[in-house]
Image (cartoon, rainbow, N blue to C red; front, side):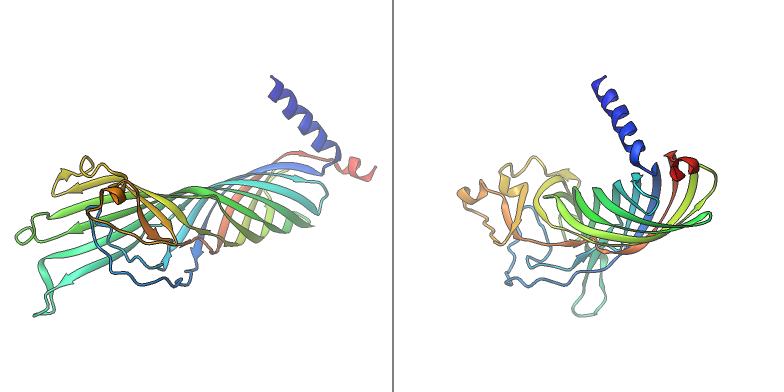
Length: 295
């Protein structure tokens, strides 16, 4: 009840000095710009039970595209100036590498091709407060938005290995780690155009640009199947289930003391920066009438 009264009072307050209040839904696609590799000391990786087979140096990890679904609420305090808050669900496209093992004598892939495939995917959520600068031309409006980004969520690392069963005991291995990180901050901007479809609805298109990276701080193994057998019950110490990303690399196969701690890998960044396009529909909940504006 109190929240309803507060919402009503806030709406009345905003409408008393505002030009319009609106909401919108939209979707978009962003082409991601890769980040440059960050140098880190080379280390000869000792593969342990977790079999995480990627480089311990800081790799170039970039998704190809980023898809978004957005819900926004805005308030124009003047016909040319306003502010907006967007809440977005982000889904980067799967990023993967494939390593094929070749026969050294023939130069051809081994019979029953042996390969390791690394896949990355993600589920992310983002808040985006921004300033809106608008100019009206009859039924078409041109505008610019600038704001800050705050994002959190999880990335998923899936390693899938296939081998020739006649030479290897474990023909197929599937392992999944979930990566988590702190809140990631960035900034974005767009140039857009909006055309009225009716008194309350408008269609808009935006050209967007954003700068933001995701840096995992913690990883946890959530799935591990080897040769058709579930391996999650084996290796119950944190060392076999968890990863900490930072400035230190450390592995240990036989030390009980080290096995009580998560593995330590060098930090890595995943680029979510780039440019793209967004399409959506705006619905105006309230707009000050022309005669009220002239008073």
